[in-house]
Length: 112
Image (cartoon, rainbow, N blue to C red; front, top):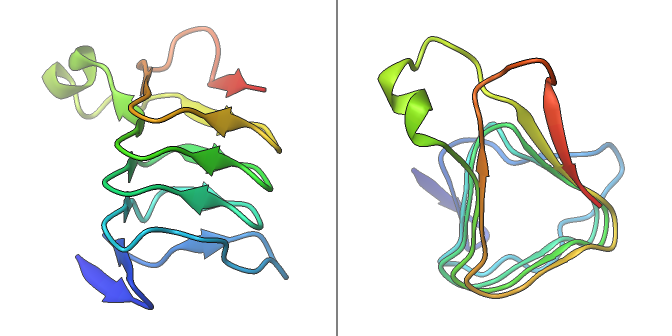
């Protein structure tokens, strides 16, 4: 894990082209497989996992866990899990938890 500009990441944070970084608390952890839109705000002690896409102006409250793989992922880690997309202008309240399931008939889940 490395820290750049107060952002804890497991790798480089990918932003949409031409997008500025929003407010991300220094204790938040953003996976290198996550994609962030513009002006994203992520609260203290929040975690954003791989295969998560946060749209523009998304607010993630403190102590939230976004996109954690369900338990079945840990028993079969070679099987891919779904992309979780959080639509633009969404608010995820503090202490929220969202999980992703292994790929089935749908390849993604959307929170709009």
